[in-house]
Amino acid sequence: MGAAAAPAEARTVTIDGVGMDFAVKGGTFTALDDIALELPEGGFTTLLGPSGCGKSTLLRIIADVIEPTRGTVDLFGMTPRQARTSGLFGFVFQDPVLLPWRSALGNVELPLEAQGVPKAERRERAMAQLQLVGLDGFEDRLPAKLSGGMARRVAIARALVVEPSILFLDEPFNGLDELRRRQMNVELQRIWAASGTTALLVTHNVAEAVFLSDTVIVMGRNPGHVIERRTIDLPRPRDIDNALSADFIAHEQELTQLLSGDYRSVVDE
Amino acid sequence: MRALPRPVIPALFFVLLLVAWQLVGQAVTAPGAVLIPPSTIVETLGQRWYALLLNAGITLSEAGLGFLYGSLAAIILAVVVDRFRIVGEGLYRLALVIYAIPVIAIAAPLTASLGLGMESKVAVAALSAYFPVLVNLTGALRTLDPRVQELSRVLAMGYTRTLLTMRAPAVVPALFSSFKIAGPAAFIGAIIAEWMGAEGGLGVMLIQSMFNFNVPLLWTVLLVATGLNGLIVLLFDVLGRLAAPWHDSSKEQS
Ligand SMILES: Nc1ncnc2c1ncn2[C@@H]1O[C@H](COP(=O)(O)OP(=O)(O)OP(=O)(O)O)[C@@H](O)[C@H]1O
Ligand SMILES: [Mg+2]
Image (cartoon, rainbow over all chains, first blue to last red; front, top):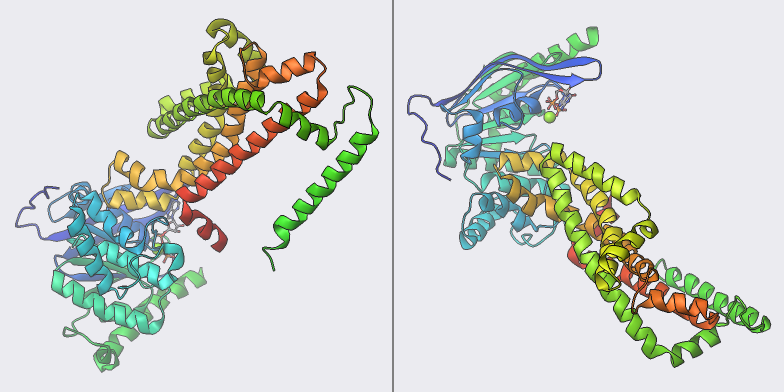
């Protein structure tokens, strides 16, 4: 997989004027309208917004799973298609989507198979990822024999194993208990900082957004749009105790305010 | 508690049925009576076992070959339908039309053109077998989890690799349940083709015992054929479980 060398000057993911219309019964439904974003390389950006505001749709568009109706996406000077076929993406879907006939290890090896990595190296790298998400000892289990939280962690390991340039995370910690979620937040921060990957996270959890992000994009719905872009300038590395600091709580409160503003406007309609 | 009654009750019922059958069969003793007691059938089985074995072998090999060709053609066709939607749709329609022709009606001209040898039987068996496989496999490929398709797209896997690593394994259970229909269909197809004229086979035995009013033999052949059909279903059931051991446990969960 010869990754097309990106020109040195373009080091952001730029989304410009992106809109998405879905064909529905009796016309079209506008899921996203005029989205403009800039994700700096190596940055951690989070999309925060109510259910149905188009977060997953936006992730799908950037990752070239679907094509937008309007607008352009540029990934470090590449088209989404070029970036995808160069194997730069790691994607954690909203559901784990594991292959039921493959063991946890086999599922994590899948992206490496697609890239033609030799078997021994595949095994080694997949094992290392499973260890990272705390699943060593479970590598031979079939997905049906894993708990929901374990299946999610397998999906995260599968996304990380290719050492992606861009990591898409669609509510990756849904269904994990609160303690495990916090642990995974700390882990994710560490992995992200160590790898230098550009991360784009979707979450409903405000504390998680503040804890992990450089930038939080607050979205509203009908149609999906950007309400505000907020820089979280807390020092790194952050640990769980930071979540009790005054700055942290201030960010949390203001983001919650922005979100509930959107909820109110929907109720008022 | 749950596992015990399941095989016991049908077995008991079966034994009772056999006993009743024996008693009624013995009571109706007229020559050429419709109901033959099981003891007579067992007797016939003992006397004619070699002929039965020989003819069953002939029919089974015809059916086996036909099944092989028929399902192979169906699998290839299903992949073509999946890969090339527009061309595939036309071929699929054509396959439906061909299947609408009754086996009996197609067996006669096939025997006329392919002769009384094995070829005509294999052809009819293949024609009987391809359809369940085609319909089941096409349906299964069509209704695959769209999220898996998204995964293969993100991983930039091509069509062939996606087919081999993600889609083909997912349709293995559907394939084996279609074999459970196609196997017996091929077997019955071979027997019907033998009626049109053949040198040997269970179909020939059936016809001959019918024309000779040899009712005990007629029943015995019928029973052997039914038993073999059941074994074919059982074989594919077991093979299906072996090929997709992950499937049952996932079904129990949902
Ligand atoms: N393929 C589709 N066809 C029609 N409508 C769609 C399609 N995909 C998404 N939508 C609609 O677009 C809107 C945004 O969907 P999306 O899944 O992106 O929301 P989301 O912000 O991820 O929500 P959640 O937080 O619940 O996951 C929803 O109203 C959804 O019904
Ligand atoms: Mg979503």
